[in-house]
Image (tube, rainbow, N blue to C red):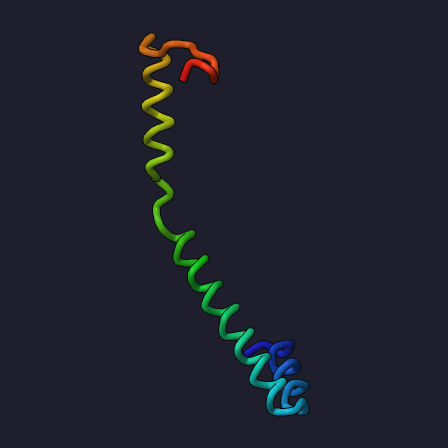
Amino acid sequence: MTKLLTEAFNKAQNLPAHLQDELAEQLIEDIENELQWQQSLSQPQHSKLEELAAKALNDSINGKIKQMGFDEL
């Protein structure tokens, strides 16, 4: 544990129990969110949106697109 986190816990232990519980809930939620972000970022970034963009670019290069206005969709 880092010095800063140790300091935070030492200060928190002087708070009333209900505030300690609130801090603990917030910290647990933050940790779980951080773990989810880390897991998401470690996954391959190839997505359906990238596939669609590649297809659209390929269609454009091969002349398979038709220029239209929004009112023509």
